[in-house]
Image 1 (spheres, protein in one colour):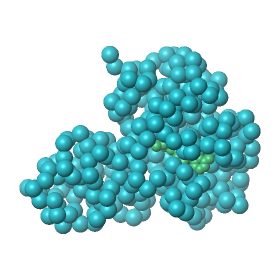
Image 2 (image 1 turned 135 degrees about the horizontal axis):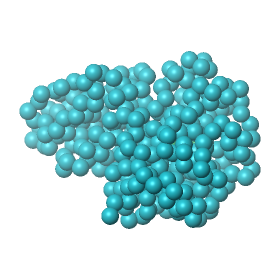
Image 3 (image 1 turned 180 degrees about the vertical axis):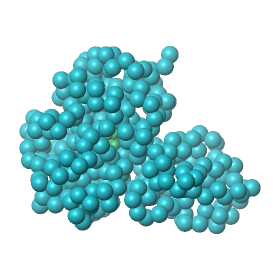
Length: 320
Ligand code: TXA
Ligand code: MG
């Protein structure tokens, strides 16, 4: 029997009993548990096989709930919250002492966001506690953007995927931390850098593990398909290197019409970056299940969501 269901009451009773429920958000599906339940939080790490040094994001229903989570909100964080919540932006701020160390990996900061999905907003409003929710995939694999992806990963581990349909944004939230009250981007994501800069001015990006031990989740290889994947500016050239193999192609808007290619996915024929982002992980899931020898992905334009998409593709690939 499928574990996918729209039953919010069931989700409430599972979560209230220290169990996990996969929840829809506008970015990706999350594997959610009560932030104050040691049992539930341990179960999140165990189920995902996630190392304990990688902290979790707390999901709240409204700006009002923020005061229970964080102890200080810099002026520019207020501006960003007003502009983009509910939405695909996570703020990393000084935590309240009541936030368990297990959530923050012992750090004095906590990551928090208000997701923009009607089903999960309703769930959060009805629950007496916030939800910790990392993406609902085993550690290191592709994030889920449809309830079926979560079911495939975790049907033997959890009792419910709360059905909210396909995720509209399709890549994870943009994570913004603060140093000396100035915003720093720790993870590029579904909210474009330019949108953030339009509100608070120029921001620094510390998107790499080496420069940002502060964002311990940012491993070099992550979001990875099992099929060997290459990222390139010149797809036709890369195809030549893999002649005779079963090749899958992932392009932005180009139709390659190349005979040596087994499968081709074009992310947005219109060249719309938002549409491409929303289909990115689903397409990687698809290609990864077609018994290919290699996947060749085309580099995106380096602005707007293209920059965030390139970040994910880089982490998924062997660059050539
Ligand atoms: O869109 C999203 O953000 C999704 C949905 C479900 O909300 N969640 C998500 O969670 O992507 P996860 O666990 O896959 O990624 C959380 C990221 C990690 O890279 C982690 O290192 C970072 O947030 N993070 C969490 N707490 C942090 C903190 N206190 N300081 C710096 N980075 C933090
Ligand atoms: Mg993740």
